[in-house]
Image (tube, rainbow over all chains, first blue to last red; front, top):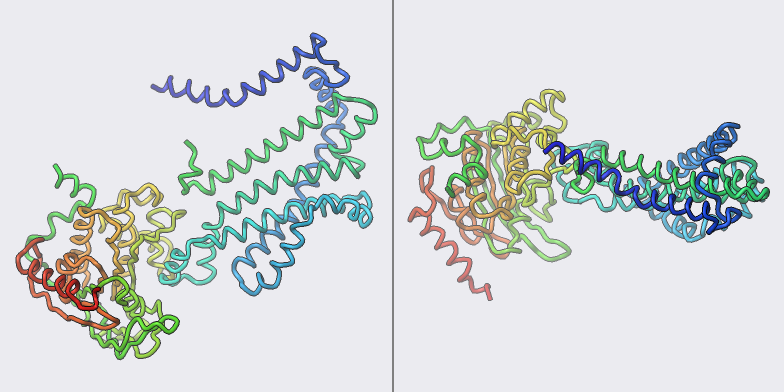
Length: 261
Length: 277
């Protein structure tokens, strides 16, 4: 019984990785046998070696650290403003009437189209990256926070009122927990946009960071480093997603849809 | 077999023993009396209640029946203060004329349980004590109220794991935990299956008899009104069309001839009303 359980758990843990593993093995085989020129596509082992070298010189860690710091700073600023404005507009009709039209107008401008303008304003300094990431992260957090608060069951709010909850209590015990599933959807969208924006911004205008590392490698035809950078993006994205999922599972354990099996 | 299933699922463990024996003496009421004078209520110019007068003595059990849209839920919500009267007044007071501040609270039980899905069963019951006592006191009293509805062992669970009848019992515990003087029941059993509903009716009657609050039940189920209430008001066109006393002694047996006769009379009135077409 418990043995069967362990086996099935083992299977659940390994099955998702079968496809990526097969891909890597096939890729290595294709390059080793000369089917694919390693000038276009370096073998996985070459990429691993490039990663090892970059890690040894410390270049990888410096760039990774710089990028992570930028991502988090931009996320904190944009996400914080988006969350606060989403709450304000969800709770106050006046605040919504005042700001929502403007927000919706700005939302329809692709934020990456502002890159030329941002370079003119901030040069290629840290502010440019922070601005772009914050702008990109703002909208999904704002829109989903607002939607979450709007979709709180009004019959629960009435119940809270009948039982004499103060406005602060009503918010803390009814409105915010009710909006949380939607806020988490916004969070996951925002994390994706955060990396995307940062990489684009670093590729175009930066003097450090992962995007810069990839662009430098292109200059010197170091295909293995370019591929390494792309793989690191994939890993970072997966990491952010895993962390959010864990957070969701602990915050939303009351919801059958989020309960772990 | 069937009865076994009912008593285990639909009734708290202590319930089957309590009725059918000599009724315990009614406690000195902490119930609130309700006085309604010339009440009018309209929504967007459509009159729903037109000039209604009513007195509910403290500790009484009154049921309001009527077709949907007759204004019975509106009357209940107005008495509870959830709607504001368009004209007239509603007074809810303790008969002993104690200070208004010390008056026991009024509570309502809705058709849906309206439990917070993100709070444990115990915390949901403790919502009924919002603003009263310390956190530890609230938890103790909530636990006691849960035991009274037979769900002591579910305290730590999420509402999503309970059955419909169990959720409604949690809602009942939440309404009762603060020791209300007036309990309004807005078709609270309408969504339950027939057997669970009978179990809940017995539970509500038993708790009403031991706690002595004033109960006001709105229902579309005439047999439910007849089984539970001392007095039945039939509402029609925004007013009281029929005001009946139910003098059948408790505990009442379901299907008793007196009750059946009364139920038939009310149904005849509701179905035979000339406005029905």
